[in-house]
Image (tube, rainbow, N blue to C red; front, side, top):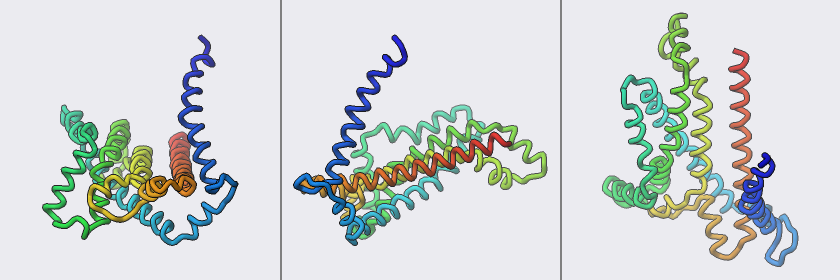
Length: 259
């Protein structure tokens, strides 16, 4: 079989499960309830204070979740990668194993812990959302960071110290720049899903809305046009973030080639 023939199943899958659903979403996003072409859905989204407020709340929640995950995951991944423990894979597995447990059970257990600590969860909606999102997405930040840091040549750090750099200077000027691809991958894997994962909010008795909640409410009310429009807005945001992080990676690759 030729390469083109081997690519036929992939092309069929791509058309049926990616392109066709996207075309349906685009159709509903740019039409009204009667099927006529319109931009009213987009205009209504960007002029409605509630939807704009939900967008900024989702962005703030995603940024805080991503920042907390990065602050926790980077030292963890760094010490795991740099340690001389023989069974580092076992320690790494302790952070990855929660991903194998049912999502509902993990959040339900976290809810009980937060209830014991804070009492009524409804009094701390944003804080509980960040804690829940961090607990859910932390492994997605640790794994790419650990993989990237372990690939850094130890001789680079040794050369830096031989040239008079302190450990902190070596860390900030050698290790962090070289681990930037892992940081970008982890940030992308956490930031984008955190904008739409409304299940965490619902299970933690959070009455606030994020973008995923807004989309679900529109489709529940059979307003497919508004729900599809918000999906397109999120798709544009995802494209911009992906494009930006891809640009950073290209810049980093070019810098490595120059060095």
